[in-house]
Every structure is written in structure tokens, then in C-alpha cells.
Length: 374
Image (tube, rainbow, N blue to C red):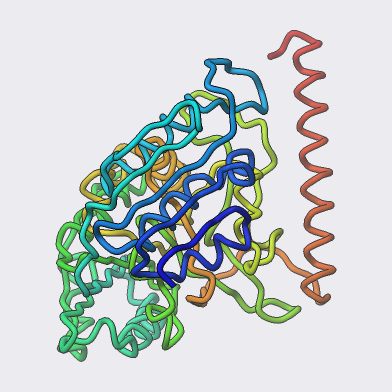
């Protein structure tokens, strides 16, 4: 296969796995209003060999109207050029036909992975850290023979805890004192110290499956594995990919948040219709050059939605926030409630709970406004 046309969500799942194509055509009609045009463009350009062409075909009118539920060809043009600015060069624009053509210029990224683990330095965390490191050592992509590396970042006084792990580097980092946990600075320092073009950053509560990195596409910008946790009803999805619209500072949320606990991982693209995406800070993967463009915000602390803030800036930068659903990991900590029922029933109960909570907040907002309190 040398050519591929993407026109439906089913096509996107196939396109994500393809590589070395000569030409990809993206029909935007089923993507634009489901917030999937970034996926179509990025998956399309990454499926091409360098020099291959991507044709974006859009049937929207070329007008400048900012109405709800309306996207014009002018907006599609802006999105396309912004999203592909680092990967391709424009070849042709035909406004009358609604077509934009690009040529891939970015080379295929070199092989190589680095893993960074955030460690608090507490002795009580050691069993969890050891399980995390043992799982990382099982990843072939992180072996020294494949130029892989594993680094733990924590207080200097805790470096001796890793004496038995001769192949793992320890990066000393002292957290600033005070009531706020300024974890973003620590993660930035860790990422900058890693050398691989692809990086996975995690807390010690995360344990990868033996083949996690093998199931991550070789091209991505920001993505996350599917994180699972043991509950009374068995293994359930935990925090990984979610959507929330409180990403812009000062703008109160209007949409109901959602995540893989409400949408099956096999249909994760359905999530994007519900709001802007983010990845949980417990584990995420990114390219080294992506971090240089969009580092974490060191002014925002852990427990202040620092992951949402970072992902909001990444979206504005034109970066794709994605999920690698076949790449699985487990969390040793699970703080979200569950009942001993089947996953399908639990998902329906959870959706009902979210609907009730959202309705309660909407009614309260209306009442507060009516009484002049808001």
C-alpha cells in the first residue's frame, strides 16, 4: 500500500499504524466537528515517508464566520498550517476546490528511549520504586544495547537506595521548601537530563507491562499508556487520557469532564468530542524536542492541575495529545471508587453519577446568579 484515504474514525485507527506511504488524503467532513482533525493531520503526516504528500480536502465555505458549531475553510486552513508547521511544507492551496497539499519534510525520528522516574526520597516508597524499576528493566527499548537509559530523580541523600541498580542513573534534585509541591521543576530537570528522542516520565506508583514501549507508535508528540488499577470488580481504567475544558486560565469550565473510565479504550477517539484532552501527570510520554517547545510550567504546583495547564499550552502550540491504548501500565495507587459489578454496568453508573453532579452544578450556578452572588 502506498496511498491511503482517511474519511472516518475507523480510518484513523488504521492510519495510526501505517508507515512509509507516498500519499495520504484527509477528507475533513467527519473529523472537524468531532475535534479529530489534529489526529487526522498528524497521523497522516507520520504515515508518510519523507517527501510524501498529504492532501487535505474540505467542503466548508471559505468565509470568516465565528458561529457555534460552524468551522469555515479559513479556519481549517489555519489549523492545518499550524498543526503541520514542524513536519511539512505547503505545496498547493486551491481555495475554490477546498484543498491544501503538504509535503513531509521532517525526517523519521531516530531510534531510542529514555525513562525517568520521579522519587520523593522517602524510605516507605522504596518497595513501590523497586517494582517500578524492575518493570522498566524488562523493556527491551531501555536496554543499553539499544541506547536506552533509566534515570531516577530524587533528593541527593537518597541516592544510596539505588546502589543495587548499577545500570540506573540517579539524578539529585532538591525540591524547594514550602507548602506547595513544585514538582514541575523536578520533571523538567529530569527530562532535560535524559538523552533519548522519546521519553517516558512516571511516578514510582506506575509499573509498565513487559511490552509497553513496544506498543507505542514510533512517532508521537505527547501520549500516555493505558493505565489500569485493581478494583473490587477487577482491573479498571485509571487516570491516563481525559478531557476537561478548564485549560485556559480564568475561564470557568462549562463541559462535563470525562476519561477512559467513561469511554472504552478501544474507542478512545470518541473522548475528543467531549472536550480538550489532557494526560495525567502520573505517567506520560513525549518527544525530547516537544519538551523544548513546551516544558512544564514551574510556577504551577502539583495538586493545582499542573497537567491540565501544561496540556492546555501544548494544544495551543499545535501539539497532539494522544493515547497508546495497546501500551498498558498499572498503578499501585487507586483513589477512585468502584463497585463489584461488571465494567459495562460500572461505566453506566459512573455516567449517571457524572450527569447528576453536572446538573447539580448547573442549577447551583443559575441560582447563585439569580441571587446576585455570581
